Image (cartoon, rainbow, N blue to C red):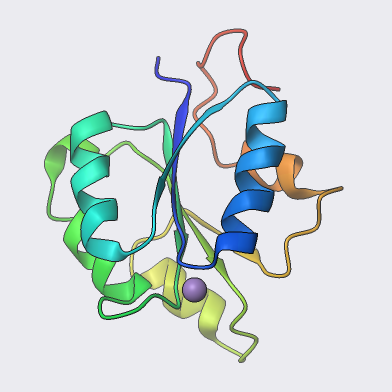
Length: 129
Ligand code: MN
């Protein structure tokens, strides 16, 4: 199985932190800075999972989620929303929109890997944590 994670995130610092933590733990990381290129890369690379920022320019995370859900070949790819939205109900809204899970910003380097891993497919061999 692919050991590649796709991060769709427009903030360079957040992208850098997440990709650093993931690569340090044996994952390969692909990045996309906006929703449209994120969808293209998801279809091209078929990643093990997708980390999706909700606050993105032009096409927000909800629109990206809706588009990804139209592709049957991505049906089994977990989509983990990463967002700093702190409003009540956002978690439910994001999950109802089709996300597999939800991680809050700011990213906590001490818990990030465990937070991500709980949403990953279990049959991914010896790579990663
Ligand atoms: Mn953002």
